[in-house]
Image (cartoon, rainbow, N blue to C red; front, side, top):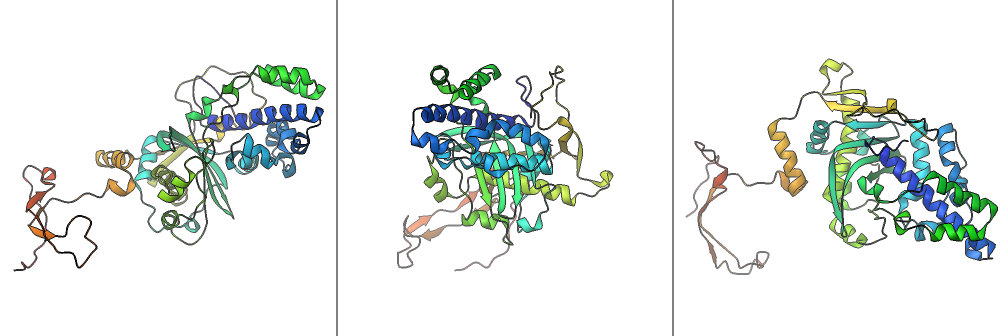
Length: 402
């Protein structure tokens, strides 16, 4: 994976997430090593798993060989205290290993294709109807999806999708992953050298010199859905799904569970499922295909970089996917409505009609059949502004009750 500040690559979000995982564990290793030297039992108990072996993950990913799971298990104390209970970082090494072993594929969607999939309802489609192109793959989104939860506001432009027997896991990332300040390689090596030498004074001095930006934990979005015969949207509406956890802890967690799945997550689910259906159902004949795929190329040529020996993917495995026929003006307008008022309200609009006078119950008494209908609603044209200049409202013939 490569990170290039001059141009965002489709895999930059994954690289940022991996660096956050690495450097957080580096800090933990330094702190626990210092505690071990001083005889602290808690530090001794947590010097195992990924806290000790984190630096070997990139090499193991590059080897594309099975690795020892125990080496990269993260102690619960570290997840709770340093990763703020985010399950994303708990499963990260295993998801990245599965991604490198099965595909290393990222689908770089065109803007029109993304809008088209977001506009398409999943209807009665279940996860059992979907055959993913790979067990684990990424989606780069050219039209970022805004999200707001528990006081956090940002956008999502990358999704990592993982299909397994236990369900579908979706991790959503965005520019906020770059909110953390990463250590220069020279300083990282100095910390590792001090740890190996067990130089408690040097460890203390280096950690003391770090700023809060080096410890920042950006919000991580994580969702799991069951693979069953139920329609995907039915499972979503029922609320039986893994909840969204913010990197800052459980702030707003109860609020999210009560209100159901936010609209931005419903769009992400549509994109993950919709892309799989597109790739599976599109005819092999490219002349009859609705979408086209080609090797990914950056929008602007970048200067030749120095060879990154730690890279775990390359641009040849990033696949650009675009819509052959551009979206119509009406479809673009509908997509704007989805992003503005939400999926449920986007197409819910009263047609032009004439409303005759009638009597209704008092406000708040509509559900009481014994309440008197004592409020008169006057006759009026409804949504007359939607009527074209020379148009007439549609309607049906109904008997008039006297």
